Structures are given as C-alpha cells and as structure tokens.
Length: 399
Image: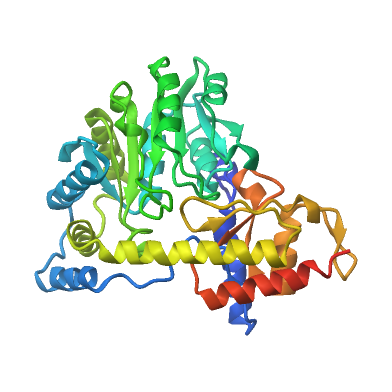
C-alpha cells in the first residue's frame, strides 16, 4: 500500500534540482553535458576555512550542538551583521540551520497559519511558493518583469497587501534574475510596510556578497520596520561552502525562540564541524570573497556579451548581482525543432537545449516567469564559451 499525505502531494518537485539530476544522468551515460542549471559556485572552500574544520575535528567537536547553534558562531554572525550591514542583533536573536533554505522554511512554518497570505514578487526562487503551500498559506504572486528590472514597486506591494497578509518575501540580490534593490527602492517598500503593522518581512540575502553595483542594502536597516524584518543569510554562496550546509536567520527574539522550538523537534543543532568552519569564514580574511566576486563579475560580462552576440533571439538584461542570467526567450516559442516537435513553452526549450545542445538550463516558469530561462554562470570561462556556442547552434536549427 502506498499512501502520501495531502500536504506532500500538494508540493511540486524542485525544478532546479530536477534539471541538475537530468544533467547528472546524461553525464553518467557518457554525454558531455555543461550544467548551467545549478546555483553553486565552482570554487573550492578557502584553505583557512578548511583548516578550521580540521582543527575542530582534532579538538573533538564531535558532540551534539545547541539547537540554535554554537554561541561563538551566533556571536560571529551578530558581529558580521553589525559590521557589514549596520543591523543590531543579540546572539539570542540568531538561529543557525542546515543552510539558508532550512531557516527560510523554519520561519515560514513558524509565522504562517492556514489561509494566511504571503506576498512574493515573481520571478522568485522555486522553493518560496512551495514553502508557503507546505505551511498551508496562500502565495500571492506579484509579476515583476524585465521592463521594471525584475523588482517590485511600492505601488505593486501596496496593492498586494490585504488584511490577510502575514508575510512578504524579498530576495536581493535575486535568484533567478540577479536584480539588486537600491537603498532608495527599499526605503519606498519600507514606507508601504510601515502602514501595515501585521506584515512581517523575510529578507533573503544569501547572495549579498555577489554584488556588482556597490554596497549591499538590507531592508532591515529601516528603523520603523526593523522589528518586523527577518534576515536570512549563510556561508554557501560567498565562501563556496554549499556542501557545508550552514545558514542562519536573525530576527525578533520571540521568533528566534519559536524557530528554535521547531528546529528542536525537526533537526536539532547542525553539524559541529561545519559550524566551526563557518565561524572561521565570518571572522577570517574576506579576501577570497572579493576574489570570487570579481571572477563572477567577469563571467557575467562574458556570458551576457556572448548571448547578445551569438543568440540575438534571446533578450538579455545585465544582472547586478548573484550568478545568473535570465534571458527572455519568447521569440523562440512556437518554433519547430529538427524532429518536428514544437517548442511551445520555455520548459520545452530547456529540454530541447539539454537534448540537442547538451546544456542544462532551468525554465523560467519554474520561477513563476514563463517565457524566460535561467542560466547559471558559476562555471569556468571555457565552459561558458562552449555552452553559448552550443546553444546558438541549437537555436539556429529551429524553424
């Protein structure tokens, strides 16, 4: 007998992980696939961080950890938020989890009751909507297209908020678009939120350090709403530590206490060794972070230039952060592949590029934006040149 709960049946699989899995399966069969679907730096974790993990093993950090994380790590996070963001927290307001995704879901599950509305500007990361569905909430999606820089306006936010709104989810720099909110843009959103005291803000800042336009700005800096902002961040993207699985939330103490209660029943405290490595990442030299950011900026310029030159059928905007390009591909929809099949949707196009060009991408509809594709440029310059060449050749076969 097979029986799956309704809450799990209501969830959609992760499209990014599904495409990455398809890519891996083809590679296992000997196909030379270039994977532009995965949101993961291709760099190795800096040596001083790895050394800290080795010391932690030698120093016998091998026992259960406190549910919200080691105090020393939470203090390092508090110092980082003060130093880099001008945000003021106590260690008791911080909870460390198994990656930023874990803490995002913890916060949604802690704040959202069945029927509560959660405002999500779209396109947005694939898991936001599914987390809200898992909590029994109602996702209220707000389309924000290329023409407005993939950023929600104050007027749009005001129109989306109702008496049932419990939470707004923001991401800057954005996955999947690379959009970055300026201080002025965030100030306008904060002014709207100030008028709606029942609404919390979940600010996903995991791509903070992969920013090409200057200082990162957090919506948590505005005093009028600061006690309603939950900052989500981690070490995965900035420090090339995706596999270490360390993320964190910082927010009101009452919420941190509730998240700790939930986490205590689900996962308890996270890896002792990874926590000590994360502490070294936050407190050690930041030079590798800047080196990786510079490499990503060079790759951004490379891949956007190549796409504009070789695949003019895709409309490309220059992302201000993260490591994704999000071209509009509507000019390719309705065309026929060499085998006669019709490219009716962006999902069809993503599968065609995987099949014909052996390049893995992710369809925009997975992010709530039909008619787009997400390409990650977190790979080598050579891979990017080869991938765009393959995409151009495959596109030129469409009729």
